[in-house]
Image (cartoon, rainbow, N blue to C red):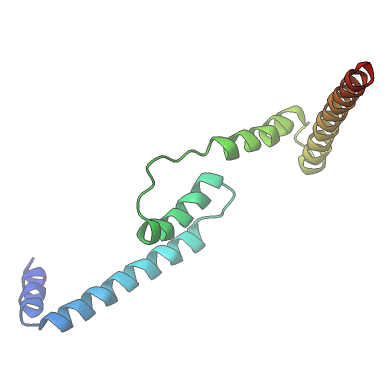
Length: 129
């Protein structure tokens, strides 16, 4: 407690420019500490943690976000989560890629068939006119 009052007395004796410099140094020190903790402790396997890391830098730059949603990234992540659940958990990476690729191929085939049907219908409409 006595140290804190001594620090307060020292800060009170400083000029405004010195106080500003001390504040800047403290802020930079805090940011470096946060960066160090995030880099050492956090592995970016969690998308939400990775987003928070970027928000920390973006909020001072652009202001607070009114609305934010990680719905799109979570939806994409769920595809991989489901693929992992369907795997036998042994060598799951290749099984996840295979499942994701197969699902993507089926989705592309569906889009191709829909496009062909649409083109055929358009062609029939133009012939009848």
